[in-house]
Amino acid sequence: MSSSTLSTPSTALLIRLGTDGFSFAVCSAEPGGMKSITPYAIDETLSLTANLKRFIKEQQWNTQSFQRVEVVVASERFTTMPLELFEDEQAERIFNYNLSPRENEEVYYNILSVNNVVLLYGIDRSAAHWLTEQLGNVRFHAQSALLIERFAAQSRSYPHHSLYAHLRQSAMETYVFHQGQLLLANSQPCGSPADRLYYLLYLWKQLQLDANQDQLLLCGERKLYDPLRPQLTKYIRQVTVLGDSDSLDFKQLSSCE
Image (cartoon, rainbow, N blue to C red):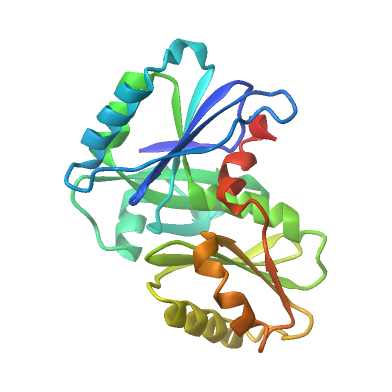
């Protein structure tokens, strides 16, 4: 079991692990200190750990030059619970109650103190242990936890509800806030534009959001949200695409701002 709060010191190596590939960046505490995010394609015939071994070997990093290594886990396998009800020893049981267990999966968690929420998420056990052994001072973050913290701060000044949709190839995460307070965090499989459009409009209706006053914000892969916006604006007045959405999670790590 592992946990982390979302605060970081200065120089860091940031690595994002996703099922469709990795991304990485080096950042410092200086203004504009994050260098460009570099994608890395994985070999789907290899395990996650084998891909990581190849990835780290090819980069030839001297990890001693980094004060900290931050690993962002981009996965739709997460669930949330109130902080006041959370007990460390119950984390795995609660996670597996809400999500079907998977082989070689370990349950980690992030504490989101601003919203008094704990986000539980799954990570490949072998990959997590290997990264810790190889890179030393590693901290793990669920991408969803980083996005929730960023969206909560962003939505705090908006007087109505905000629905954020983070789109990936085979899934979509949705987060609903009211003036910074998290009301919903969910993930669902969505593999086509029609599925994404249907689910977003269905969720909007179920939550009884206002088509004129509440806002919908899209982020994730541009090729996924670009086709949706013209369709969504037929039903929702305020539809916004978040700029530079590929780095929203990395930017939430304070040393990269």
